[in-house]
Length: 204
Image (cartoon, rainbow, N blue to C red; front, side, top):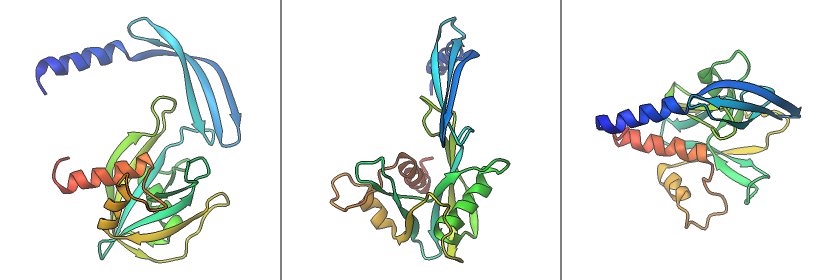
C-alpha cells in the first residue's frame, strides 16, 4: 500500500472514532437484548447507535473447520428456521461461555456437536459477526487430525446432524447454481473455507 493511501485511511479512522457512549435505554427478553446509545465521534458529530446483545453478553463465538486424518471436512446440517431453506450446512460453532477462551470453546463445541476431537487446533482468523449492530467477535479455528470419540451431546435448543465431506464436495456446495437441497450459505462458514483456501494457496 502506498503512503498516501495509508495516510488517508489513518486520518479517516481517527476522525470517525467514537469518543463517548451515552446509554439511552436497554431491553432484554430471552436470548436477545438491545442497548441504545448516543455516540459522539472525534469529528464532533453524534448519532443513535443500537447494539444487540446475546445471552446478556457480547455473544462472542468460535467456529471450527475440522479435518479428519484422511482429509475429509466435518460439517453439520442444522435446523435454521429463520432462513429460506429452514436448514443450513455449516461448520460446527457456538458461543464462548463466561470465563472461557475462544480455543477452549472451539474444542468444546466440536466435541458436543460432532463427537470429534482434534490432534491439533490453531486460529485461522477473527472477525466481527455483525459490526453494524453488535460488538460480538467470532474466531475461526482449523482443527486437524479429527477423530470420532463420542456421540454428539447437544443442548436443549439445538437440532443438527454431522457429516464428513471431501474437499471437492465442499467446493460443489459453495456454488450458487447447484441444485442440492442444502448449501453452504452462512457467512461464517464461507469465510472459514475461503480463508482456508487462501492460506492453502499461500495468498494470506
